[in-house]
Image 1 (cartoon, rainbow, N blue to C red):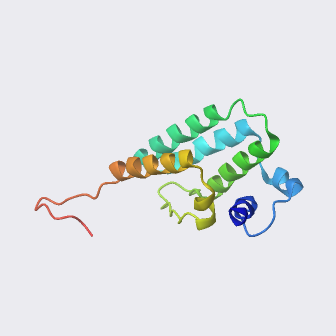
Image 2 (image 1 turned 180 degrees about the vertical axis):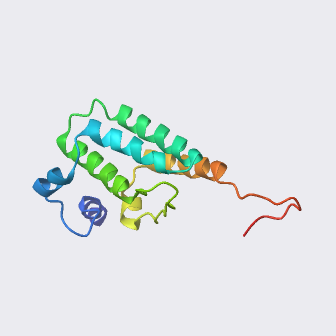
Length: 137
């Protein structure tokens, strides 16, 4: 049990979080929210609507949070997401695999949300089938 607690307390990234550097590169919540929604304009319409809905719901859920550590983590994760979004229209968005350490630290509720998101994304991005009924590779 003790090794699990130590693992949960470890930093998700390789380098330790320096709060002064993190706060210098973070945006305040409202400008970050606006930048996220603006950056979604470069995505295809299906991805944009999914992303916009998710961003709006997450920011609503965390509106009343007062814990500064939780707020810093929330803003830093959204800033990392913003940095990975395409900056030009019609530029392909390349996703990345979830870091195993992040996955291990997720609560059962977060795992459930991730599972629901996976199924919602699969419904949006079904492969296009030609007229003969075979799937595209």
